Length: 308
Ligand code: RRO
Image (cartoon, rainbow, N blue to C red; front, side, top):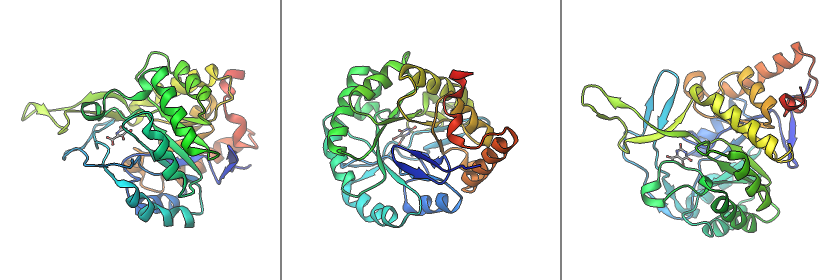
């Protein structure tokens, strides 16, 4: 059976991707994920502006979840070019550059600047939950602002495939994804972190995170990710490629997200528990499941729940 899959003309050796987030800040992290078997890489979301992230502590690990409020640190276009240009040039697997911008229009210039580095695709992160104080509500919280950011990003991206990363914290993610597709998104990444959530230190009686609140990831959010992927697949009649991400730590988790409608699978939080080898392990487990169930081509799983 084949685990290799082609999405928007980009071939991945298997469907697992490093999700944009806390592991993709440095090219060394991305190389570890490639060595660990990842089918592709999504770099941490960066913008053109310089921003300091939130002060420590920025991560809380619970039993079934992780909270983060990294706070979107960004070091300008030169950093992305110097650090990730060589990775893009040498990588044996596709590299997706994820980007953020503080206004919908600014996604245009950001996309143009990042597209010049020739990644396999761009991802417009319009759903960070941790910077409302400085950047306002995420664009993905409403269809009109999501579409405006997408339209600008696609103008800058040109012919380069553009994924748009959406938030699960909305009542109708299907409608928002459809608006993004109409505005030029070639695919969507579902989902960013849930919440925000909060954890309290019982001794000090204060929130653990310096930002007080943070996005929730890990196994606890997996059912929400599956429902969001299923909703968007249905709302877009299976025509919009989906990178499914949220709480995947083993092969069967990934297969469930594919049945809901995902073509590719982002993994982030599980690196804590299974190490950078999690990508190869999950891909291997997917292959075993497919062999046991007579699935010859992994792509045939995508959206199969809707046809069962
Ligand atoms: O940097 C962050 O705090 C962050 C980002 Br950009 C995001 O998109 N999602 C998240 O949970 N954290």
